[in-house]
Length: 308
Image 1 (cartoon, helix red, strand yellow):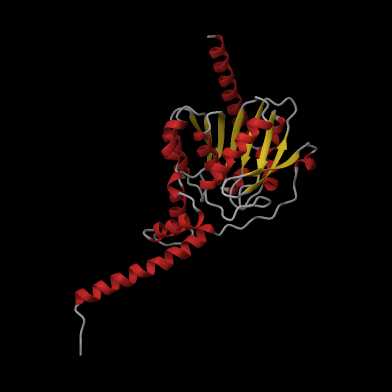
Image 2: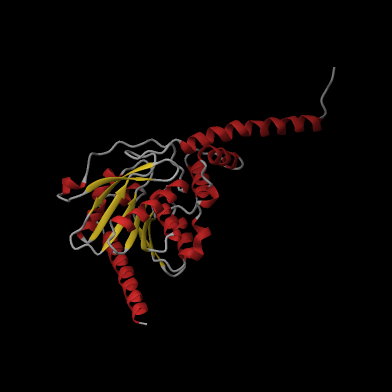
């Protein structure tokens, strides 16, 4: 009777464990990609006596993006809005009305793989950033009429807004509510907190599958990589002490990386609570003031350059 040596047993156990990591990683990649397209509340600007027009933009990687343009009376800037995962332009719109009243024309769109927009996958920031850049170029060419362009984003939309601002020199300022630092950090964090398992090395394998399936380069979704491009870009970070989905320490890390032009506003609400009843909270007033200050500084700088 043949008896395996302890060393051979250890080698077999290690091999079995290593082989099992591959299907586990693949299953995790499917979880990462499992984002449902949300139903809409049916809300639209007309419900608030606001004029708007619908239009579509060809996004990146075969996505078609459903958009609204909501002009403000006496508009002094255009604010491009990017919502979070499992949300839509319809459901987030009521929180944006104070910006219209403050003189910001809005461009609100459904992210890829959300509501009326197409796109096979939500890629947690890679193709979404390229989509926002294409939306911005369209706005600059057809809608802005030489007005300053700013970004407002929530959660994934906040991260996308910061990343796109790093690549678009014409963006005057960014308001980012609950952004995450990087794609890898948010997937690692969710695997521990909500799925209760230690992520390494399964998540690393899952991200390889994710990358091959979607064409998204996950390492490029990392705000820290763009600190140089964002160092002088005004960015308002809005976070929460009670946000279990986007820890406040991430926003502090982003602020540290972006430098003195980044400000941090902290509230007591939870993740999804921070986009509810915005008109009843002080953070919307702070954000409007922040954007207007950035716009005024840009106008003054452009005037000084033209005079010199």
